[in-house]
Length: 275
Image 1 (spheres, rainbow, N blue to C red):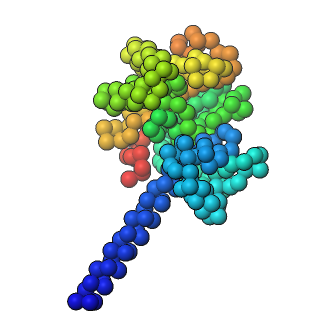
Image 2 (image 1 turned 90 degrees about the vertical axis):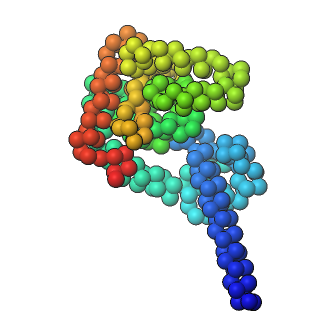
Image 3 (image 1 turned 180 degrees about the vertical axis):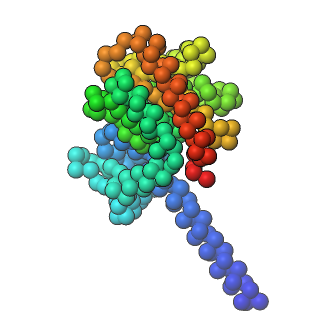
């Protein structure tokens, strides 16, 4: 009996340790999600707000992540930046996706044709995350690399994704935006719905200075299949290209690139995860 009770106690203790470990891992991953690729260092206070974690928990996690090389202490001021291990992990994951190599040729042709930046992204809560990026010869300076997060509602990429998403998901996301920001959210949702009306007519949405004042862009969804994740493309530049050119030439060309990517994935018999 004592052996049985002791065995159960040991098993319960190990199960508890496993649960604690899983929670810690989940929190650590949530903390790493808080980082973008082009921003000032994030202090514990910033990370606590973004990851929605208690400050003492964040302090313990950042210490551990620095010690293990996933975060680095910034030399530019108080705070942390992604460490070498985090960058290598993300790069290895993206490089392993068949989508990366199959999408790039069509994207690069479009980037070179108009001398713009072209990116393919996936949704991540209130953001879109770049998976593949290409740029024309004159857009290197404004290039946003793979791993960059951009807002869901203010960008052409995000609006294109929302337009193509299942209606119940789209409305839930818009309701969440309104609930989180009752004052500013109403205008953001109205701009999104205007983009949806544009996409109903053309197959793409536009954003002229609505995310960053100097950036013009168009976006189009990428449907890989019924059981595959919905993705979206954008094409943009900070140089002066007229709205008429974006709507009349770049937008339709981007829709063609989206179809070409889906066709390439299908012809190769590949799923998003390469399974």
